[in-house]
Length: 174
Image 1 (cartoon, rainbow, N blue to C red):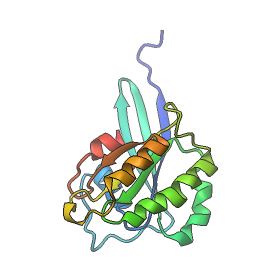
Image 2 (cartoon, rainbow, N blue to C red):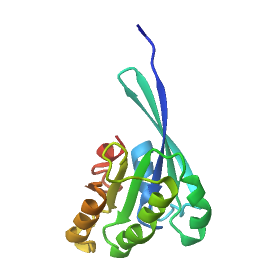
Image 3 (cartoon, helix red, strand yellow):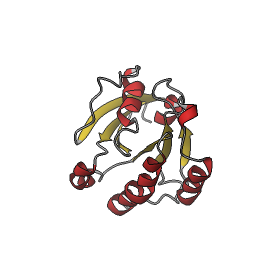
Image 4 (cartoon, helix red, strand yellow):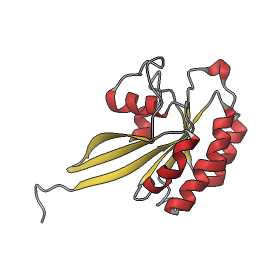
């Protein structure tokens, strides 16, 4: 018997989506517990790295969170950094319907190509679709039908979240 022992697990989690959708704000809010001032927050250059630790029973889980820049100029080099990932978040801005289109047209196909993700295998699909900025209800552009279509197409879990208010961040990152 293995009394008193624990396992240590490390998972690489990708945060993907266009620039300005709030990826870094989501991660900072989840990891550090505060909403960063949008006026002073700079766009991520390349990738930013965060860690979160969880204890589940006796096991220690470390999530290495890779927050990738959304600008097109960084896309070619970052594709090689996707390998070895355990899952991640596809983030779009609810107030910018084009950011949802870019998930459909670039980010999701790229993950399928690079890490051979099988979104239809419930045991392998560790990617979540996140619509950020739900606190800006009057400015929402992305339609529920478009979101539902993407969820159905790939079998994603979906959360409408807000980095500003912290809505659903606990559920997303656990």
